[in-house]
Image (cartoon, rainbow over all chains, first blue to last red; front, top):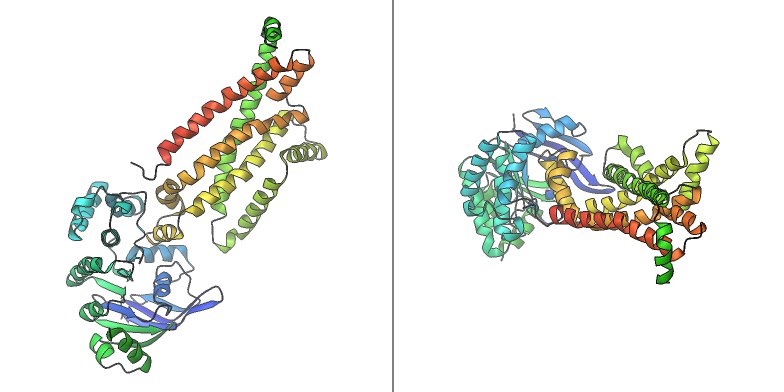
Length: 245
Length: 229
């Protein structure tokens, strides 16, 4: 049984179909990377998984159990088990770094404040921001904000961490500090589902690469297969274009 | 003119005239205060109701939209007449003051709902989504994430509306509610000079609205700084 299994998923924004037919799996401890041209539906897939966009057809199964996205309770349960980091960090602008990390565990999960704070400080130290606890998001660089967002997601103790193009809004010199934080998590065995355009990074960390285009999964394979021996023409074209420069 | 005012003053500032003015001021104050408080509470509810998404709440959204758009467009005086005659038609006997009170609440609710809606919209959708993805309830999202960022958009226009609104309650005199403006007319008709009477009325309006304006400034400094330090 797969940890997360997506079966024939379709979703649309109003009349505009975005996900045509998605089937893929994520196992415990795996790092699955989604690649593909922009507009292929990668971020939308994450929105569907988080219950921010209801799927039209298809199923998402967690540990074999189908998730009913029409049911509020089921959606809440899912959001307890997944955490997402967005491309634009989306830190709460009115809160300090520390508050951003602690607010959900304390206010939503009702965990003990002192414990949460201790853990939050550890997480922030881990992503290299131990000295920024009292700073506000607009005082930080993009890379620092994104690392706060990662710490915030981890504080929720998710079973699966979804990372949605977490480096694409960053200046090139800031990309590595964020990738390093993710590498650290990978080394710890965190299950991650990653959308990324950093092909070198994808190749290095992923256990499985999924190539998506036009709302469909075109090819799934090991990093070596996708980057060196793609079976599908579309994959070959995409990878060829990306790796050429 | 000043000579006349000074000459008239002892006969004007009598106990009974003072009582009339104080009662009228109390009426104006009550209409304004109740209108502002109920208007803010109900307006907040309507603004939040318009942001709901579930299909079951569609009737709520539609009626909220209808209410806000209608009452923002009907002149205050017409609303006043409307409420007045509706109670006439259904033969429920309520005081003129209650008619005025209901009218000010309707108007204030519609206007403040729109101001608050603007404030809620000013906070980027991604902040709502992020909170939702972290399992914040609607109330938690509003309290911890949205309102701290929306106050600075909401407070200035809300307080300028409040101030305008205090003056608008003068229209209640049109259905015979004795509030400040009406009391002014009464005293003016009694033969006191307009300068003295309406000068006093002006001061009393100021006494009500100035503390409110200061309160607005204080609220802004407390809530609407870009951060809640």
